[in-house]
Length: 211
Image 1 (cartoon, helix red, strand yellow):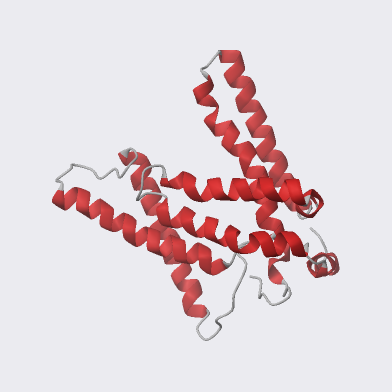
Image 2 (cartoon, rainbow, N blue to C red):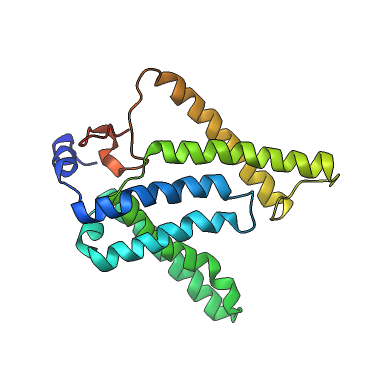
């Protein structure tokens, strides 16, 4: 585990101003849309991530050093696992002779790597994640009740299959329940907070209060 001093030094290193001012707000938009639209519009789970992938590509083209120096040792381990798993899946698909359409999972894992670099270098606001998740949960629950009570379907499935729809609905509800406890503990402490900042999340950083 890294020492507190090393974390303090890494937290004090500034994020590149150009990338930060260009992408910090859009990154928050992408995180917000991911929670908001995942289950209430066709392929809604792709809209927010697609924006984040485009932003990460832009950041890598414009200021690659800023994104590449963002991860710490723990983050590099996570990235290595993601890349390794994607490589194993691709090798397995090639050996089995599966159709190219089945490469969606490993490709998504690989695309998640630049997105993680983007989130580490320009952390989105925590309110973007909670706002999208809360509104998305309300809309998803309303959509499920409409399908069940108005359309009379046996099991609500949204725009996907019933199992995925139910599992993701339950996950969103549990995350909101967990966030409720956090929100109650933050009464009177209204600060803008990044969603994720790796091991630096216990340290203050600039005008953010990082959690």
